[in-house]
Every structure is written in structure tokens, then in C-alpha cells.
Length: 109
Image (cartoon, rainbow, N blue to C red; front, side, top):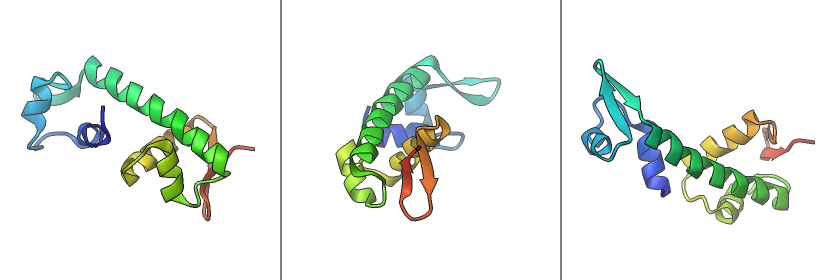
């Protein structure tokens, strides 16, 4: 999965022009008029996030922080700022990184 598809999936919903295509590809289904994520969505986005989390964690570990976000994103293979934010939030939630006002995120000490 590439970042473009990931971002599309994360923000898809009712009224989205791509929704019919994403339903056809098996990422969503309509149940009682509501857009629902499928197992395919959960599995593929989960693999994508897990891969990016490990790479982002290693980049922050190597550089000591995410103060230079461009460098961290490049080392982690992340092209889009939204992907960076989403993955960094996951790592903060897991307790591996801590938010920092100056350095964005740092390793939990």
C-alpha cells in the first residue's frame, strides 16, 4: 500500500467521490446506510502502519528527535506529513515516543 491510498482510506466516508471504487476493491461496505470498514481495510492499513511505525521509530532513535522532520520522514520512508502525524501519534499512544514542543517527538526516556 502506498501513502496516497492510505490517506484516501483514512479520510474516506459518505459523499467521497472515491467511495464506490473503494467499496468495489473491498475496503468498505454499506450496512444499514452506514459506511463500514472491512477486514481488508483493517489488515492492509494495519500492515502499512506497523511498517511505518518501526521505520519512524528507528529514524527518531537514530537522530534523537523529530526536530528536523524532513530528515526523519526521509529516513523513515514517509513522504506525506499527514502519514508522519498519524504514525507518530500511534507511537506516542504506545508509549515509545513522547511529544515535545520543540523537537516534535522524542524517545521516551
